[in-house]
Image (cartoon, rainbow, N blue to C red; front, side):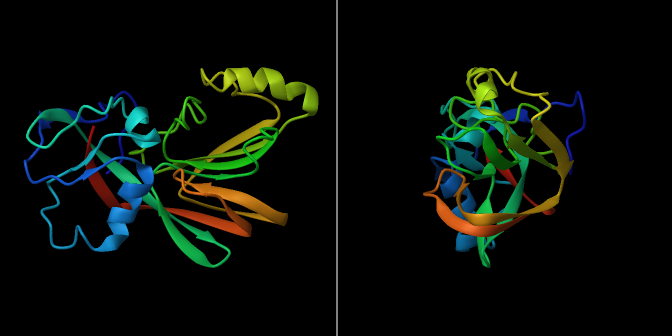
Length: 203
């Protein structure tokens, strides 16, 4: 179920007392493949108290089982990195964090830390925001400053498209960061969003 333009992202409601709680994006993604949710009531959300997805959905870490929170249906994805599958809910980022001039990003959530990295990304619209960044040295400082507000796009050195799937190859091993996990050095990455495999979160 996609969220259309101008439609509310979720609804305020009471979180069931039995709702599981996770503290960040990686923990939420891991929960999806751990089997912990198998057989569970799919109307019960997972409480998300931190991470980039939480911030992108307007959460402040205040959601609790038994309390009131915003409940949102979000998309989930999988990344195939040099032949190994990793679940993700927020983003896959390829490139050195200290070299912001050359990045490749698959974003399901807008924020990466304090950066509004993919300002148009929405975790429930059935699409990934794909960003290829190739900036000249003299363009990096201004773009870096604009990352906080999301004003780094549009830019002729930043190419953006939207899709459910994407792939990227690199000529040398490149750091791949998935939902804030430790970087993986790889040459090939493929991402896929599965609109049929959604989950409710409370933030």
